[in-house]
Length: 498
Image (cartoon, rainbow, N blue to C red; front, side, top):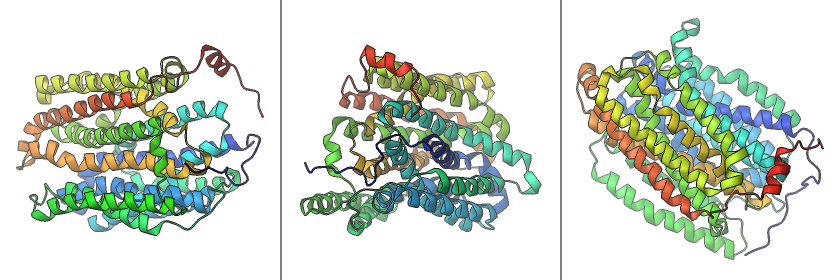
């Protein structure tokens, strides 16, 4: 294995502006997390205003995740090569501009294009967040910071529907759904100015050329897999969808072969394949993929079930998700600060089983009560699900990056985010089969009657994914994240300011 060299100009003491920098990158992370789900509650309003078809709605919700996933590896590598601060600020500027395009869109085609461009800009912005944290904070503070990061991501993901509901029902200035995107403008401008002032620049010491061949092969392979999954059900699964999915295998195999060849020649590969020799990194990536898959299926089906199936207003539907948000934040905090340092991998596995149990409870309640399900019954399953997801998401990020050398922090964080987003894109695509396929065709009244059946059927798949994550977590060392009693005591003591 080649020797890893330290980051260029890596400070020997903690950066005094690190907490201000953390606030800036967390704002960017929050904007991204919100934009993944904010559009769900606005779907009926978007359809009524722009006349979007079902296929276009799926692309508006899933296209963001798709372009995000396709660009994340490249975005992380660009930060390593050209400076993480520089690429981060470029991503923030682009994300803000594309949010304006989405907010002013006069047709569903323009909105779809804006959403996909927004995902591409997020792919430049988001990988820099984890790598900036990784290289800015000393190791003794990193666990706490990743816990905060996990909580913010959880909050953004689950409050996205609530924020969307408030803005849509508020009908700010008579703009309907458009403020769900325009709200990013002041946040983006503020983040751009503050980031330029407080974030320190860092990059890999040996700034090699970008692996263009690797970028093309990776993008082509992922697109060949995700595109037919997204379009197949809507178009009746024509022959080209199966040909495309089959072609993704040799394309991705060619990508791996090229990366190995480039490494042997002393080049700078897009993906550092040697990272997968680390057990915690390889196993963690598989769990991240499953986590994204479960999220992609659940959140789209859940928001449509509440509004179209139960007839709830966007605001009532959004408010019903607050317990899930609170549970995720509580689970993330307990996991990072208390449970994982004491019990290690077992905590993450308990979280997977808890989330699966929440889904099975939801299946029972949805089928038992149908459209007459009460608010508290719709909330109850979200609490174990949220706790379980929180127990997994925050420590998993830390465990995945714990053995990664500083020089490849951007590449590793890009991979980590790619697996989640790719899972979400595939999850949205699979919802066409496991959710919309059960829902069938017909008018709104007919679909509303079948909604509990379609929703509960999709939850079986979500529960199965969490069960698979439980099994895959055995790939992590049993003591992953665990600290000796003396170290846990020291972590609880206040750390003197640097």
